Length: 211
Image (cartoon, rainbow, N blue to C red; front, side):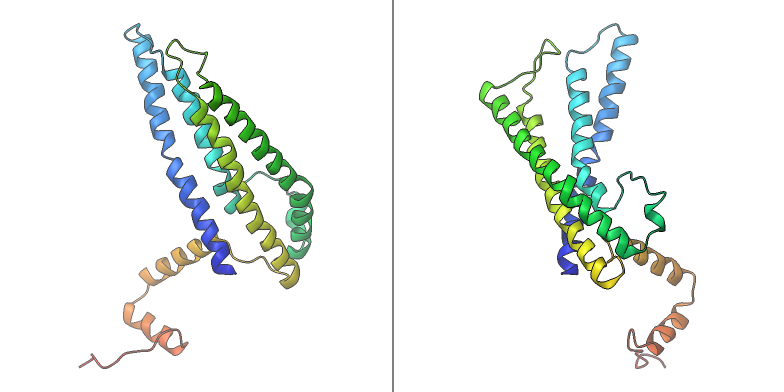
């Protein structure tokens, strides 16, 4: 089960980190528009549409990634003092009462929004070029599916925590632990580290190559 949960975490992370590159493109677009507008008195007709589409894409596609990292803002001045099992119970109730109904509504309305836009071949009314915007609106139901998938993972984690009294590890916890191990290994003598690991039974100590 933990492999499956971490696998979905990895998928959400891949999606979020891939679309995070949108910020580079967005920065270049805005910079180009500012230079053309104020230095050459020749503003573009496409920068505004491009910029809000890129920002919206970045914001939406990072949602499941932020959820997988437990990165969404919460009012935790009381929550953080609760025991893990109590935290999990609160989270489980909130997921069932608010998260899933909102996500289903988001997916259904988002699909309707996209379908109407696609049927009309809707174009932007904010610029003379009028680029098609239904591909941008198609991201709404896609994001809903990604959030739903990650939300199911979080519910499973809540149930596991209620049963065991401890939160199961997230992908971020695993990555952080790996980094700590690598950092600790870099500070130690390799041979001494190998002896310690062999003594603890983590790896066999191969002495056949020593002269």
